[in-house]
Length: 382
Ligand SMILES: Cc1ncc(COP(=O)(O)O)c(C=O)c1O
Image (cartoon, rainbow, N blue to C red; front, side, top):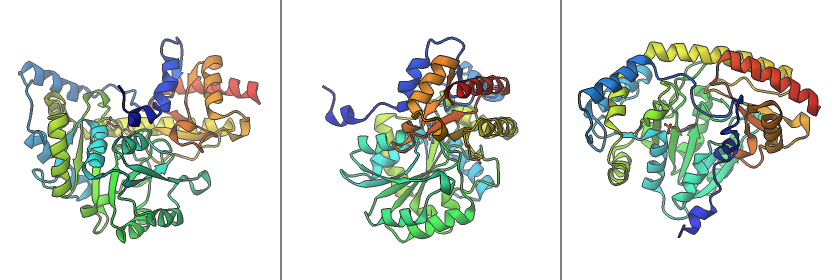
């Protein structure tokens, strides 16, 4: 009964691996891409109050008017980006839905979409589910996992319909300066291409300022900006995001959304309003992640797992080249022998079999214990 197209798509490398972790006691999981913080109390309290007050209905397909207005004000205040709340913003069920909607809205069969590797696992799968073809641009450690402009120019010759950008990046933690983004835009601007910019980790930028892609000169019209509440606000379970862009594309996305989801849950939307006011809580979580990052990167490098300093998100993409084990064997043995879970690099692109992704969305105590266990493991395999 299952379509060939769906059969063909491999399951998420992460989920597959984490089925192994489930049910194993005493495992320190540095695998999941999810904040370990509970949603700040003031946000949870709003959700509870919303329920108590009987907010249990559908909302407008686009999302609550007041929430769209507040998202618009938030983007204006934070990034001087101006989006009309009625015409240029749609509230989605997480960035995940925003991604799917943007691809569904633009793709015809065999249209090409550029994905930067190593990639967030959903990108190629969603392109293929929407009958598109993925063109990969592989980034390399020697370039700090940043997009190589010659490769970008070459990819443009294939006339892709869209490119998915993601910064700060899952899995590398890489982000871009304004100048670097301008160099990328200079190439893209000449093409007839839509930029889908997944900036779900914008609040988790440690060095410098996050520059949204649509804030570059003339880029706003050509960009769909995707963002949400999962990471910066520790609200993964609320399933709340938003997409901003040109009226024509947002209205196409809203049309699909109105048939498939109807709307994002009203309780989450009301909680999201409070979240936008919780900037102090966001900044406390950010500085906590930064402390953990500084600790774990130093440890990993001293253990011989060469690791770039991630500038954002909460992941290290560490090289295991020295150890003569592929990423799946490394991760499996580390899990079985020392009960530490990490994600094999190959989940983020075939060529990254010499890497593992380590999430530092975990307590400093757990990170300390994990690095002791990792040290013991490395002594064994060396
Ligand atoms: C790059 C990236 N985009 C999107 C998502 C999904 O976000 P959401 O929870 O808003 O659907 C994730 C989750 O890990 C992610 O890493």
